[in-house]
Length: 81
Image 1 (cartoon, rainbow, N blue to C red):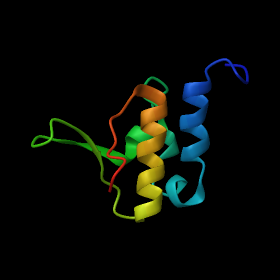
Image 2 (cartoon, one colour):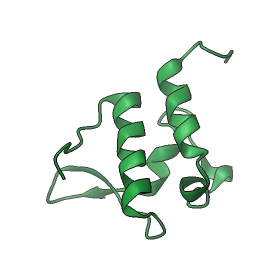
Image 3 (cartoon, rainbow, N blue to C red):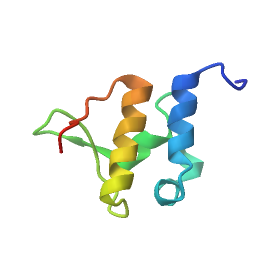
Image 4 (tube, rainbow, N blue to C red):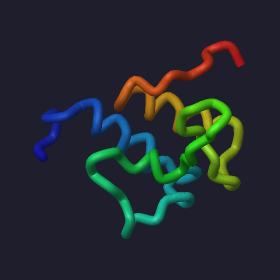
C-alpha cells in the first residue's frame, strides 16, 4: 500500500499508533482486513456489536478507538456521552 491509497485504513493505523492505544495491541496478530483497532474490541451479545474492551484504555483513548473504527468502517458511536 502506498501513502494515500486507502485513507480510511491509514486513519485506523494512525490512531492505533497513539502510545496509549498501541500498548494494548499485539502487533504480531494484526489483521489487515479489519485494521488494528479491532484488536481492542470484543463481541457484545446484548448490544449485537463489537465494543471497545481493553482494560488499559482510558476514557479518552477509548473514544479515540471508537472514532478510528467509525472512520474505517462506519462503526456507530454515541456522540453524546
